[in-house]
Image 1 (cartoon, rainbow, N blue to C red):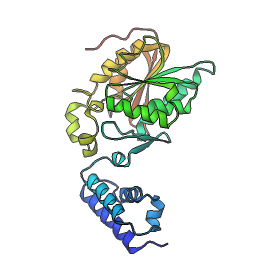
Image 2 (cartoon, helix red, strand yellow; image 1 turned 90 degrees about the vertical axis):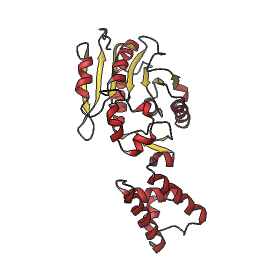
Image 3 (cartoon, rainbow, N blue to C red; image 1 turned 180 degrees about the vertical axis):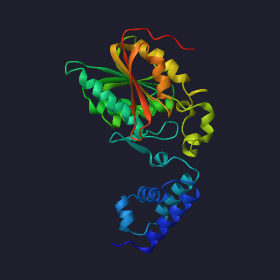
Image 4 (cartoon, rainbow, N blue to C red; image 1 turned 180 degrees about the horizontal axis):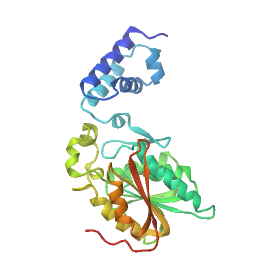
Length: 294
């Protein structure tokens, strides 16, 4: 079936409405939104190879477009977000996984492979949110087990559901606590975290999808954005075994400051993301005590 006039009009109308709402890549998102609301592929939407939708489908499209005009995150409407090739359930109250966070999984898998085949390494994912970091790592490394922590009961529920749907629930323990306070001292081979790191005064300037809908608990990092990271470092080096590694995601321009907090006591490495932004700071536990930071 060739592109029909109805389908062309539908896409044009959605695109115009999303553009007027200030949404970037409005045409692409219109195609994806229509595909999900109609229950067909994006290719089918582009080709017009679907029948004219009934009243129910049209009402669903209108609901989705109206919600996006309010800048509700597309991932919340869809109910899932891809991360490391896996589909994670997400919704209000949990941070939407970002591509740059996949660097933490890349790093974890490198370090896990270095440990050799006779170990059952323990990963601790601090502030797990949807569980994407811990679960993606476990899915790629069947010998590992993990503890995932979060203060939010909503995040803990999403992480549990994702662990079940992605087949790692038997190797993942989810704990509600502040940072890694409930994790035993000296028990972890790897500590991974995407902590809150946005300076409080910068929250107002974020995209509406983030500022108005994603949980502030997962975003706001205090005056300079590093308040949670300072506390995290103390907890992380307490729970790491000697020779274990910590990897922390940071915001733009923060990596060197975070590295400075670590480098007198650890071997430190900074890794850039695909946009060449210094994004992840990695540090090896050398056995030295990390001093407390106020």
